[in-house]
Each structure stands twice: as C-alpha cells, then as structure tokens.
Length: 338
Image (cartoon, rainbow, N blue to C red):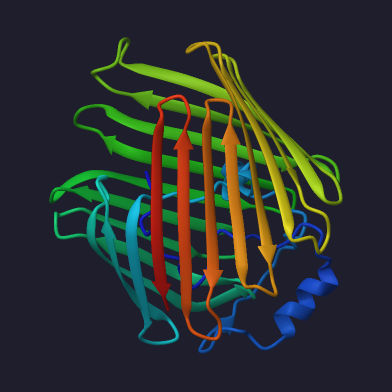
C-alpha cells in the first residue's frame, strides 16, 4: 500500500535512534527540554541504542535517495492549526492519474519517546473522487509499536493492513496482516525478524504466506533472508530468496558530508530481469538547495531540485525524467507553502 499522505508529517515516526549514539547521549537527550511543545517524556525500560531497526528498513536509506519525480504543475499549502495538528491542500495539474485536488490532515500526540518520536501519529488524505488513505501509528511502550493502514478507492474499501513491531536491545520482530477475510479464506501474513549479531553485522529472515481462492493451489509461501554490514560511514546489504530474487545495496556518506550515494542491484531468475540503480543526494546548506538524481540500466534518468526560499516558508521544486528506452520525457514544476 502506498504512503497515505504525500505531504511531510510533523514527526517522522519511523526515524529510529542513531545506532552509534551512546547510552549517556540518549539519557542527555531525554533530560533535555522537548523540542515539541505540550509533550511529555514516556518511561523507557530498555536501551535500544543497538537495536537494528525493523526488517523493512534495511535498504531504507538507499530508497530515500530516489528522487520523487512528478509531472505537470503541483501546488501544496500546509497550515499549522496547533502544535499537534496540521492540514494541507494539494493541487496537481497533469495527464497522470494523480491529477486533481487532495486534502490531507496530520496529527501528532503528546507521548515523547525521543527528540524525534512523538505518538500517537495519525495521517490521512482524501480527494473528491472518493479515494482516501489513512494511517495510525502508536507506541504502546518502548518495545511495542503498532501501525494500521486503510485505503478507500471510489468510495469502496480497497484494503487494510495491520502491523505489530516488538523490539528488544538487539532484535526486532514484526507481524503483519493484510486484507484478511475469513469468509473467502484470503489474506496475507508476514513474519519478519532482524537481529544484531555483532557490532557491525545484522541478519534477518522473512516468511510471507498468502491465501486466495483465485490462486493455483489456493495458497503460497515465500521465504527470504537479509544481511547488513555497517562501517563508520557506509553500509551494504544483501537480500536473497529461494525463488531466485536477489537484492544488493550499498550506501555511503562521510561524516558531515553533504553528499550521499546509493547503489542497488536487483535480479530475478523467475522473470529473467536484472537492473542496477545509482542514486545520489547533495545538500547545499548555504544555498538552501537539495539536488537528487538517479540513473538505472533500463535507460531511466531522473533529476529533482528543491530550493527553499528562506526566510519565507516556500519550497520551489523542479523535476525532470527521461526514459531512453521508451523515448518518454516528463517535466514538473512545484511550489510548497508552509
């Protein structure tokens, strides 16, 4: 399911503590005055400074480097109604399916677990065509977090998903249920586990089970395994599946460097397709400008420029993409207010 909101929430609920942060630094950050008003610190009973994060976030830093390309004209206005609630109005003019108006709302609660984690978090958006997305994220304790997603298309329920994360000092386990229907005996169950076995090495496994009366055999199970090795300013990860899927990624960023680099290699024996992607992000702090770019072996080239017009709350966007294989070119211009 896609992210329920195209706008940036007040808090990133999936931003974990830095793995190289010491216990003393965490205690200092908790004793400091919260940077978000009207919040209170919650009791933490477990040191999660060496927790490896959840299974789905192994390649997250590489995925985040992908430029958010769009086509046509885009205008987004965000208004803070309080320290916990904001609304947004987005208008997109293009020939694609995302053309039109969209209204969004974000809410963050008062329970503070770190300087960047406040719960509960409620995100949602809707458009005049009866399409809506919603997501609720809550941290019940420092070990347990739940996520509930729902999607409506043309005024009809299109799908839902529930996930439960359980974290200990060195492990993270996740169980996910999606579109479960006991009447038709259909649905998806995903079990994931990621563990830190050494200071630099994380390993994990995933089991996906899907049942549907429309499938041959009416059910299927897929397993996959992942490993990640981290250095001082880089990490590399490998994901393998017995069905013939291989995913290899590499991320690099030197300390205090404005440049981030990512490389990803994907191969599937079932479809006999292989692709490699190179992406980067460069931040010009003094110019309030961010460049993002990507090129892959299929002939796709994407570039996005974000210019923050400080001290005004404006962000100017330029997006372009060129698909050499299909001889297709797309260009977009956008303005974010708020």
